[in-house]
Amino acid sequence: MNRRALLRLLPAPALLSTLPARAQQAEEWPSRNVTIIVPFAPGSSSDIVARAIAGPMSQATGKTVVAENRPGATGELGARMVIRSAPDGHTLMHAPISTWAINVALRPNLGYDPVKQLHGITQTVRTPNVLVVNPAQVPANDLTSLIAWLKANRASYSTSGVGSSDHLTMEMFKQLTGTDITHVPYAGGAPATTDLIAGNVQLSFQNLGSIAPHIADNRVKPILITAEARHALLPNVPTAVEGGLKDLVVYSWQALGGPAGMSPALMQRIHAQAVTALRTPDVARRMNELGFEVVGSTPEQFAEFQRGEIDRWRRVVEIGKITPA
Image: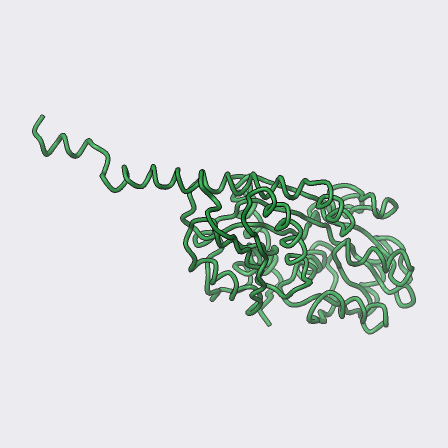
């Protein structure tokens, strides 16, 4: 064998030098403070979860882990900031379903690719949505009577905004039940719920944790929950599957990730720290109080899940002819 042929069989020098460096990077992470970018405002669910895990991660690693809010453009501003960062694990992102999946299904000119330019490390938490109605305006007490009422009456529903989980959940509900309900978007779940209680709209899908107190006070009436099984917070509320809507299993979820280019070893190290933080008693209890279920999926599991979610919501958007606000 001549020298040129032999050289072609040898690993490239760049690869030889990169592999040990990437392994060392994972072993040494974090070597400085870590910033978790939250592409939404303080007090949002993604912000609450990010701050909840930042404390235990700081204690475990000996480095400061902080959540930093970078809201704007329905999450795009913060996502692009993370994409431009070095793939060394020191700039991460904690964001909801919209940033990781719905935006790419809803916005054809989205300025980032959440699959190619970002790498998910773990789905942190999830919560189902609850279909609630204004009890003074909607006489229905179950899914069958609600569908009949909707087909006989004009009705409107409130959401936390175009492209939100509660918006697309209702669009899926409409497609599955053949109902026609007018969409009234708001700037967040709180004003959407306030107007539902006031009777300015008749129904809404809202996250379990945020709507449960209003159900307890009888200000709204629950019809169904989009969880896989009945939830301990609302044991008497049937699932959509129980009502015959087998495809209406929907969760509003959050995920932690970072820029593309992070090594598998680095992602596994961050994953271990994040999941351990999520499962500490104080954090787990806080998540439960908020109506969240801790998930803690692996990077591989999240990648497969994310692709499925994008495909699912793209079909809903296309059938419903939904366009960005």
